Length: 332
Image 1 (cartoon, rainbow, N blue to C red):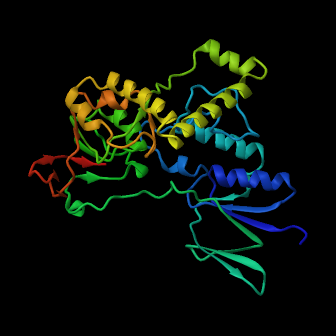
Image 2: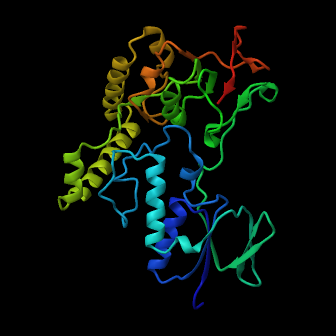
Image 3: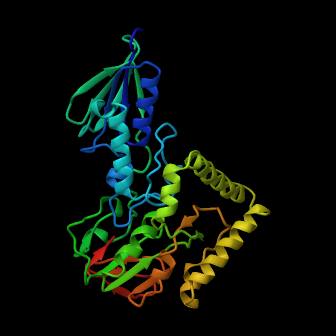
């Protein structure tokens, strides 16, 4: 096989990285398909307010394409997309990408010893190898809530944020307090007239303000030899220390829980909100979240944290099992 044909499904971090690695080994007949109108993967789709990575950018980047000009600890969606476009262009990956192609099937033909990849529009591609780099964050997980289809207001999923819907002066319900909600709730709270945050289980939090780097620090990272590599290694080791806490809940895990508890108690001054927001499981059993803004937002006068389960949605709003109905204009 002189020049194997390789087809990659997905033009996010995984697909772009796979293409660059293949090119470094001499592969040249490479095609990347993606259903989105441009590259980016999950960072193209998740455009909700405050969308950002919660892994520091000095680590959340390719080892072969390090940048010294990150403006903050954890980059925003826009910064990450710009980084991916630059890397794809620098390595000639962008010319291999075909956007707007939704792959529906990949079938192996044993006689021809080849793969046939089919798109929703009927087009096909033949290749010697297929790499599926679709990830797991490109499809939203919508909860099954009784009556949601009968809601007369506006509803959408945060993964498909409706930027045309004006939240100002609206009564809004947010269903869920996972990693996405933790980022966008502080961004929209001030705009809404009333914000109801429905939570099933609380989260353990660690602090993160994610401010822009002061000019002296940014200059040092950019100019001092080896500082970028040192910072990347430091961030990696810090992440591994959190993993050690999670894997050893009776020893190191107690240190993580103590730090998280102190931080959360300091942020949650309202005793009732603290009671509702506090997690009831061991530190690390679920994803530990990083934010210094979400918990204070829950204590705003126009925000209510609701821990009662959702009974049903009707035309006007959301009803909980205690019989209370919260009328809302929008549900996210």
